[in-house]
Image 1: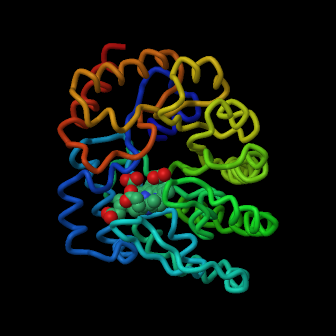
Image 2 (image 1 turned 180 degrees about the horizontal axis):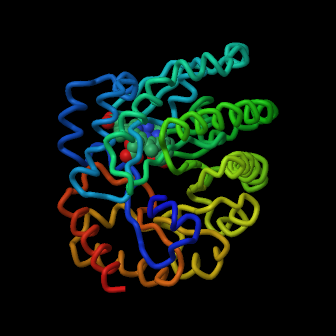
Length: 339
Ligand code: CP3
């Protein structure tokens, strides 16, 4: 069992492992070098050898406790028939959603389309030391729907008119997505991953009356699936503020990733039933060493006596200097030795 699995199962509560969301990405010059030669992001994700190489880059540079597979949550809608493009200006764009096409999918076709991801996992697991965790991930149904149906505007607000005109159709879509999300989790875990992370990056945009049906319930079904297979699972319902407490009670994942709005002291008091991960604002890594280490200390002190995995409140900002990250890692590691 890897150290992160031990922490997730509360078998080790003193050691604080460390990894970062978006550790494999644009802040690394060695990633940018590969990316510049591979302009098509989807093709790069499906190049098993290169995506494995990218997944291992942050481990080689920083010796982190986990590698996360270089892939994207939007490969699910892609595998379900929507065309996918990443633009520099407006991020990912999916072609128009088509219900009939969506319904025509089947498990076999889906697995075949995503097989390069599973091959990447097999290659990566072979090259990764046994004590390192390999993290698989998926997007939660609501966050996938936001992209699949283009539900938010450029100010990252929900397009209410669109939401209201489409919401009657959500339930069967969500249930169908859960089926494929669980299938993708299962295939990733069977290929060699140890832990699952479920990203509900846009949970904070849900109108309050829909939090239960479009966030808690779908996440709970995915967690139930993971638990039935004994896959340790971390949920990240970003932006839901104090509702983190009711999320924890309803969904019962092994762990919750905190976002930057959750105060560590509040989390310690109100999220006692779950293991915690992350929380520190990634923008802090653009500041001075003194501020970085002071903020990190706040998290390490608050979670001294409870199982905690060091990470951030969202992905690493691409402008972050690797030197700053190394400083932070060394600080967390030194604290571990002292304890
Ligand atoms: O190190 C890692 O975390 C590995 C892989 C990873 C990527 N995307 C690669 C990526 C992971 C875990 C994701 C998850 C993901 N993708 C989420 C959930 C987490 C979050 O950020 O909220 C979401 C919402 C997406 C969808 C997505 N992919 C967006 C909105 C964008 C554009 C914004 C951006 O950060 O560029 C992407 C592109 C993307 N996915 C990049 C990477 C490394 C950058 C692409 C590039 O190199 O141009």
